Image (tube, rainbow, N blue to C red; front, side, top):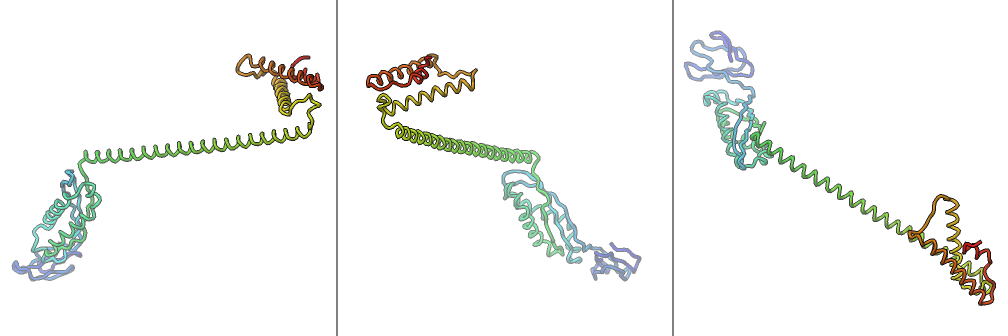
Length: 308
């Protein structure tokens, strides 16, 4: 705006004054102190050269039939004060009309998701449309911004539910995949453990067999001729030794655990073992006597048969 009295007028910084002589435009006044031929001349209008912003709101429908509200900010500047002032009666209202037309021609060709993803493209297209129109009216469109794109409240809630459901599904899949990995890893660990346990048992049994083999070999080398033992074979002698070891084990168990009695699952097992040992010793004694050899020592027989 301008201020002054009669022939002396002042124009504010950032503005330009349009001077008319009896209603006809004659010149443009720059900011500062100016003189006019009053009353023949007057400052008819003052045009701001500052960058202005016009905030607009528009409703339209997307390709998937969703009504949404769009907020647009148009930043513009007057490039030609005379052309702008004398060409446009209401620049803001006319800019609004062109913006709404451009938005309603672009958004209906997109789905809601695509419109969210392409806000910058929509803003560029809107700016091109406005520039092509208002460049000839002394206006420079500096920038067009899509500041908000909001569908109906119920649509937003539905979109949030869809997103939440999708994320819950992904979380369930991830949880199931983690459980699957845990089960597979446990199975692999169990399988590896069983394999190593089997290898250990096999090595243990091999060591036992090697030890027994060495013991039998050493025993055979030391015994040599078995005629002095009543004609018994090596196998029978080894069986007798294993029987003695079995009885020694029972004695050791009874000594270390006097209150614990170890029996087989059947009550008759103890009597069967005793009977088998007694019969074996009697057979061994009869065979020795039939061959004219010395019978086993009486102490050993009493120990094996349990007699005193």
